[in-house]
Structure formats: structure tokens, C-alpha cells
Image (cartoon, rainbow, N blue to C red):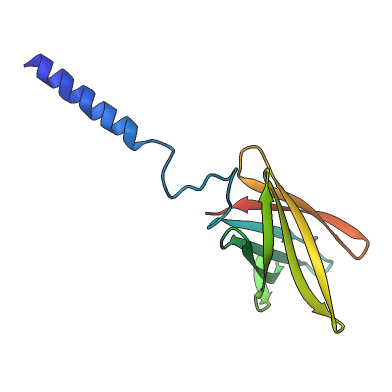
Length: 149
């Protein structure tokens, strides 16, 4: 009788261990594809003399192996309370992903001319964040995208 209980316990442990495997079909291998993943970047400005602070949130979604979308939300905070929220802006573009480096390309029309913008994001070793540098009007800053899904 004891032998039967030991085998039942062993069977339950083995089934439990196989159920905890990290290789689930819903988790993409980030060394090969970004398809279906979402990343978030929060950019906080410095507090102004009137107590207001601007916060920009970017949500980056990789749709398939070549297309992405970015949704940007701009909020103004005063003493930690949201006092103004601008309409979300959305843009889309194409990307390549090779050796944990994503190169995002978008096209915008400014002053009647089509301009191409390129952003290179490099994934860290833990696959949980992307970083890239943006230069805007003689000022450069680092964007850090953290994985949401």
C-alpha cells in the first residue's frame, strides 16, 4: 500500500513540474521575433515653477514581423494630479529586428515634405527593456521601453 502512495506522489510531482515549463506557446522567443509584444516608455519632464510637470507615455506595439504602431499620450500634472490630457497621437511604421536590435522607420509630412525618421532600439540581456537615443532640436535623450506584454 505504501508503494502505491509513493508512485502516486511521484506521478503528481512529475506532472506538476512539466506544467511549470517556461516554454509556453504564448511566450515569443524575443531573440527571434517581437510579434505581438507591447512596450511602454514614460518620459517625465522637470517640474516647472508653477508646480506643473509634463508626462509623455509611449506605447509601442509590434503587430507582425514588419509593422509596428506607437500610441503617445501627453499629460500635465500639478501636485500629482492630472490637470490636462491631450488627445492620444498614433503613428505606424515598419521595423527590422536582427540580433536584438530593432530599427524602427516612420514617415511624416512636415512643411509639405515627406521626412523619414529612424530610431534604433537595443534590447538588454534580460529581454525586458529596449533603449535608444533620440536627438531633437540639438537635444538628445534616452528612451527606455519596458515590456508590458
